Every structure is written in structure tokens, then in C-alpha cells.
Amino acid sequence: MTGYPVGVGVGRASFSKGARFRQLGCARSASREARPTVLNSLAIIIGTAWLLVATTTFADTHYVDINSTNPIAPYTSWESSTTSIQDAVDIAENGDTVLIGDGTYNVTSQIEIRTGLTVRSVNGCDKTIVDANGNCRVFRIIITKTDRTGPVVVEGFTMTGGDAIVKSNAIGGGITVRGSAPIKIADCIVEANDARWGGGIYFEVGTGEHVSAVVENCIIRNNRAKNSGGGVNVALREKATSEITIQNCNIYSNSAEVDGGGVCVFVNDKYPENKVINCTIVWNRALNYGGAKNIDIYNSIIYGNSTPDIGGEQKKLRVFNSCSPSIDRSHTGNVGKKPRFVNAKRGDYRLQPDSPCIDAGSNIHTNQATDLDGNPRIMDGDRDGDAVVDMGAYEFQITNVEIDIKPGSKSKSINLKAGGLLPVAILTTGTFDASTVDPASVRFAEAAPERRVLQDVDADGDVDLLLQFQRRRLKLGKGSTKALLTGETKDGRPFIGGDAVTVLPPR
Ligand SMILES: [Ca+2]
Ligand SMILES: [Ca+2]
Ligand SMILES: [Ca+2]
Ligand SMILES: [Ca+2]
Image (cartoon, rainbow, N blue to C red; front, top):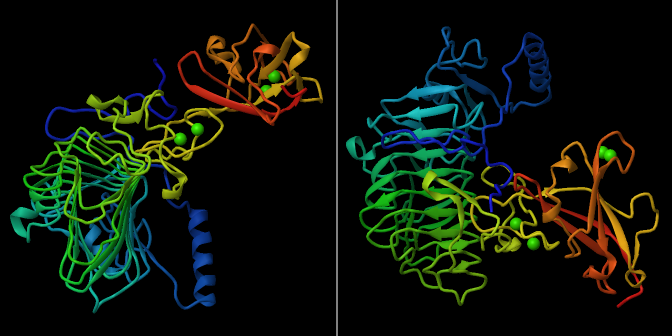
């Protein structure tokens, strides 16, 4: 099988010599905000004036541009932007946004966020790098009960080179979070950071405190913990509670010298509500629990970590619809087979077309409309007419094609006793070229085509593929109201199409 799922860009995962390597197209990198033109600026000014009249609570945006030559506080335009992320964060007030332009921001002290802010990049984590170069931790979010403010969002960065061992309390090399307000960390690469606990990310839940957080669409890799939680660590003090969800993340090649190479939670007597959903947690190392410790796991792949992959002392550890050799398969939907990645050696953990993880998750456990690549989720990856979420961070991609049964005929009824050939066309559309189809791979109601011809079936000026199937070979019953056509393009991209049918007479 040579098929690659749609969305695997050539050279997407790239290696360079040395300890670090970057995935060129990271989690999400779509441009979110164009720099304003003069006209746009005018519109913004007018809009701003209107809003100031309309409401007294107006959220500002503070701009950071590494090449700025004219920083003027409070940095509310690109023209007056600061070169320092910390300066913009410090001047921003609750509810404001700090927007950061492309570049590598080398920091010598941690960026500390103490207010409810959105701190995000314009063009995503492969264009916006915050590098501590081993000097300090990269980010710290600290919203305590006394200075409680609105939610904090950190979005679209590569955070790297963080070292929490050198200067601070040795927790969370990439980012440390202590928040009485909701926290979201999204679309980030957290890589090559060091700490004693939580090499990449550390959640600190103080005595009696509660932390509610989401980590989503992140790649967390090559982080190291001298003690526990190579990728992510959660520590709950006495009477503390937490609801931390880690979803659509790829957590790989992290290490811890004691517990939890990928993810580690230190539980207390309170039952924590921490979850891993649709994550791929692979090739992490620890003395105990290479993959994850003390966290519930749904729709995920925990594979190739040092053994045991999963476990801990948390009572009633829930692991559902997941793939791992070391999990309890008496729980619902778990499989122990190899996940069959596209190219694990090169860090490509997307699924091959014959992966047992395709359509093997449970739709109940996910609310995500896209996967880590930003591709649509949920797809009918096994082409049986039922779209089910996959296990892991990447949804196997299928192209939907338009088909026409008995083209030119208003009737969509199929008389199975009539014998002879049934024509079915695969139409060329703006998103699909029917001439790229490998006809030998096509099945319609499980039958292979007898004849094929390229012609403009619907007379719209482009060439479609007209196939003919033996009626008697079609697997359709009296209850069939829909017939499926599946196949692959010549370069191995799977597709599916369906059309309503009436079957006459019933078998
Ligand atoms: Ca699927
Ligand atoms: Ca399916
Ligand atoms: Ca067409
Ligand atoms: Ca056509």
C-alpha cells in the first residue's frame, strides 16, 4: 500500500542534526490576522471610536514585532509595537490580546503572565519561536486566588530551550501554570525543555486550589524531566482539584528519570478529572509508566513507550477506545495491535490506510471538528458509511466524491433481477479529478467494475469516469437506501461517494 492520507505534506516532518528538530508545518499555522493597511487602519480607528462610545469595556490589542524600531507604549499598533513580549504582557489589562509577529524571540528571563490575557502569534508556531536558550523557563502563567482574573490563552508558539533547573524552582521548563482562571494552551510546539518535574509543561495546583485547563493541538517532544513528567506534569497539593484536558496532541520522545515519560499526574485523595483525548503518546521514556501515569485516556494511541506504558495508583483509571499493548482490554473499545503509523522513524504519526486505529475511537468522547493537522474530523476512514473518530491526534483523511447512479436517468431504482450492467459515474468537481481514479480499486456495493470509460457524463465541460457494474454482483438488500462507492486514486488517496437508491425487487 502506497497510500498517504490527504494532508501529509511532503517534508512536513523534517530532521536536522542535533538534539532538536522542528516539524515545519506545526499544529496550526494559518495566518490569522493580516497587518493593517492604511485603509484598514482607518476602519479600525473608526470602529474603535464607535466601540468606545458604545461600550466602556473595550479590549485592546498590544503588538510585538521583533523588528520594531519605534516602540511607544502601550504598543497598540504595529507601528508602535515593542520588541519585548514581556513589556506588552505587562502593559496589557484583563481581557486584552498580545499579538506577536514572526521571528525568534530569545529570552533571558521567563515571560510571566499575571492577568487574563490572550497571548498569541500572528502566523503560528513554526513562524514564532520563543527560545530561552537554557537560561530560564520560557513561560509562566500565575493567576492566584487573590488576583483572580479572566481566562488566559497562549496560542501559536514554539517554546524551546527552557531550563527550569538553573534558576527557579525546577518545575515546568517550557511553561508552568498556576491558575484560578481557565487556561488554554493551543497550537504550540513545546520542545527540548528541561526541568526536574514537567520538562515541557507543569500544572501546579496549590492546597485547596482548582485548575481548569485545556492543552490542545500541540506537539510536545524531546523534553526532559530529572524527576517526573517528561512532557507534562500535574501536581495536586492537599484538597486541590483539577480538570485538565489534553486533546489532539502528539506527545513523543520525552523522558523522565522516575515516573511518566509522556504525562504524569500526582494525585491526592480528591478524584481528579484529568483527561487525555485523541492524543498520540509515543516513544517516551521513564523508569515507571513511559506513556502516562494517573490520567484517564480516551481515543488515544499510547505506543512504543518504555513499559509499562500506562498505569498508576489512581483508582478506577479509565482507558477507553485506545490503542496500546499494555492497557486493560476488558475496558470498552481498546485494542492491543500495532497502530501502523505512516513513518514513525521520521516522526510522522499519521495513520496508514490499514491502521486498526481508523474509525476505532468513540464519537462520544470528542467534540473536535479538526485534528492536529487542522484537517476535518470526523471522517469515515474505513469507508463503511459510518463516520467514526480515529484514535490518536491525526484523523485518517478520505476524499468525498460525487457519484451519479444511472446518469441521465431520473430514476435511482436498481432492479437486481434485470441482470446486465448498471452505469455509475464518478464526477469531476472543483475538488476532485475523476481521471485520477485507479479503476481497479473501485468497488460499488462491493462489486468491481466490468467496464470503464472517461467521458463528460454530465456535459459540464470536464471529463468524468463512467463505470459499469454487473447488477447481479451488487451487495444490496431490500432495506438498502444508499449505495456506497469506494476506491483510491492512482497515487493512493482513498475516496468515498454515496447516492440514494431504491432496490427493486427486494431479494
Ligand atoms: Ca475516522
Ligand atoms: Ca466507518
Ligand atoms: Ca464537473
Ligand atoms: Ca463532467
